[in-house]
Length: 633
Image (cartoon, rainbow, N blue to C red; front, side, top):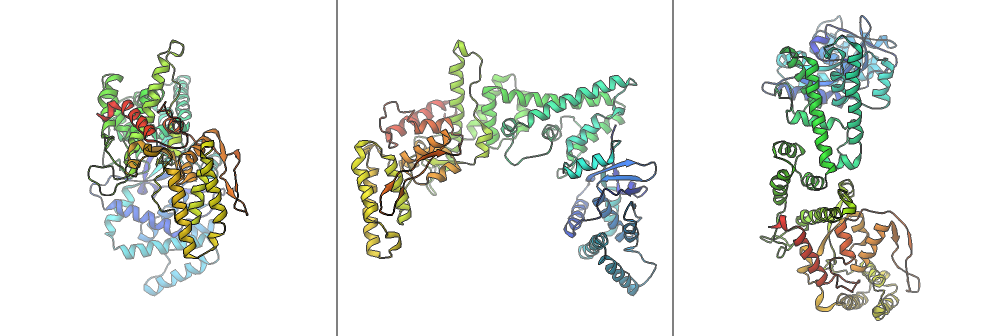
């Protein structure tokens, strides 16, 4: 039964307001006052401006003055602006701060005249402000308003007209207990969202053309129950982050559906003058405008409410269908991640002749457009200013992500073809984890052309190598690494340039022996920057191994997958290597293709777990080409 409408500042000048004792006094900062003035001024500069919509003013009727449940700070500020401009005031009284009302009404108008008298009145107000915190904030607000008006040198007449007639509050008249509403809005910090305001619009009893209270309650309950079902579904991060980026949070997520209705103008009532693109309550005003137009056209409000709700149902059921369908989920999720708008995808869905056409003629064609370099045989990434090349390793991100998604789709198809598993979805790529964990495109075989000239970097690199070379065939190399640490013990404290030169030479020779494992089957520096040497890793996993060799990276990946932390070897005081231990640690989602890379899944003939060989890379590249053949043509 709550009432919602838009009221101009001029409308409020005709009313009286009462601030109850459960509210604090006026506390707006100078910055907040100035921001409001700037917003209204910028709005006033627009051609054919519609309305500037203020936050909701929640009130309850007292059969006289209106009890202000929420919004008194903004209401008081508007009152002060009117005072400074010399316009008719808004009548505000306070239950426990009666002096505040008097100070508010007299701060700009004393029964004196002339410049000296005006200055005297200001000094008098300043003196009062020193002894009362409410007076102090009111005084500061007035000071800001005066200074702002002097500095801006605005067209006063135009500004006043906009303020009175085009600045409007969302007037929310409640019949609930005001203290309970206040607690919900302020103590719990749950503001009135577009969706909550729209809910009050839709469920208002006067919308339903019936005198049968039971029938009205049934309609209201039907919408309310479906509303909660939709909100509950969207509260799932798996669903929400399929559609949105991390950080796009809101108290009520059903707002997302109403925002789509507004942006796509699904009610066919867009009025650019009334619906300002920068307005926080643009969606509410869009629905409010639609209902007002229907009322003007003498169309049943009950039918108008049903039309709105049918659009909500249609959008939600479509989003849910996308989420539940194996192919739609992965292809649409990919396009959203790559920056395509859900609105555009939804429009294409509605004009397509069935799911097959939608996938083949729209989704797949759009996916092709996201891949900048389709010649994965010859494209070299991380080459500066190279024409027709990748230029940056991030340019292969679309291919790597799509390779994971299409691999998942293909595996589901294979399992689904088995009669025992018919029609099941066995695994979905978790977009919510992919978006939350900060992913990188990283080398499989480290791109270690970084010198490694300091003792700390050399130590870390050799310790990773030592831990990775577990096979008996590498015992000689392990002994050499251990001997290096013994003979170079204390070098980090030694600044002798000759000793540093000797250490670097020994390290380079030892490093070359380790990197030469596999001989001609190793990737050269140019080959390390091709697609066959890149995979996806979350940023924390990437940082945890830095420039480690393949077996050390493999160890970290396995640990992350198992929820284990395999600590690095250390050097004791005698220069001896002490092997690390396995402890419980944090786990990370490892994409299927990244896991397959480090398990040597793509090369069934590979028997060397300690290096990423050219044969491994070739098999990986061939799999990418085969899996993505529809997109790389």
